Length: 130
Image (cartoon, rainbow, N blue to C red):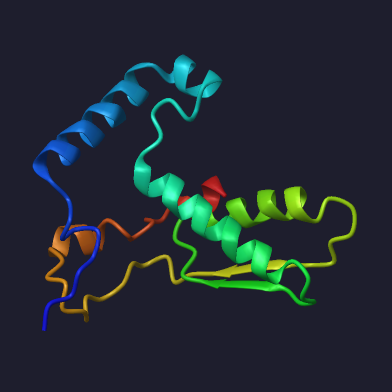
């Protein structure tokens, strides 16, 4: 069985370009703060558009948002902003985010390297940052 993911379709050229964008973003923080979309990776934009579509599908439904596996809380912050956009005047929706803050164990058939799995561990100082 072959499982396809974004890793399957990644090319060396794309990886090199994304690495360069990341380097430029770190080297030019003042530019990034004024124009955050300038260094935006395609994957992040795709994630944002997916979460926006998901929010649009639930906007008419009552209830809260529950995110399991929040990692650094990125999706939670996106949901908070989407709530402000799509429900600016009447939101009774609470956003709950849960995480172990210890990463995850590889149990898929994607052949993910152990170092990549460990990168999902938020470390001990992330809670203080939040």
